[in-house]
Length: 147
Image 1 (cartoon, rainbow, N blue to C red):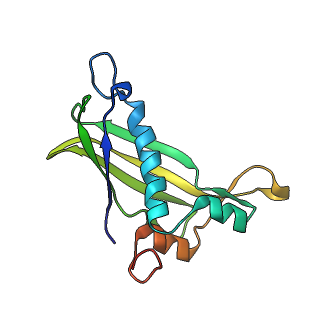
Image 2 (image 1 turned 30 degrees about the vertical axis):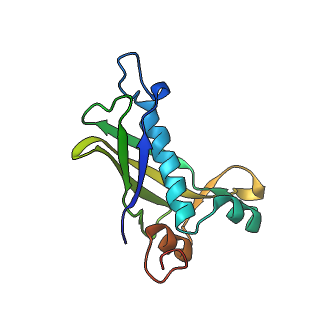
């Protein structure tokens, strides 16, 4: 299992008037990064919804982000996502860090669920992540996306 790494350029519209990244962009980047990790590891939520109409995705139910140093217009951040911690429960955790060179800029954690339609096809309920999907999201060797 290895971290998923992507690079995020800081654009003008990501910044406040002081040219420092506005906090909400880290939340957006964590969400985008998680979905990039999933696709790169062979988990396509749109395809899963077609195959299983009661599947509602993997919604975010909690998030935390701590800011350690400023990132500014023109920087490129390394966004590192640790393999999701998926146990036997209905929620799982995804850790994120953002670095500018050796400097830790921000770090955070998402809590997500495996969402299925509730009774009668209405609402949303959490279900355990299917084992094959969990293995792919973690990037474990031997899975189709982990080879």
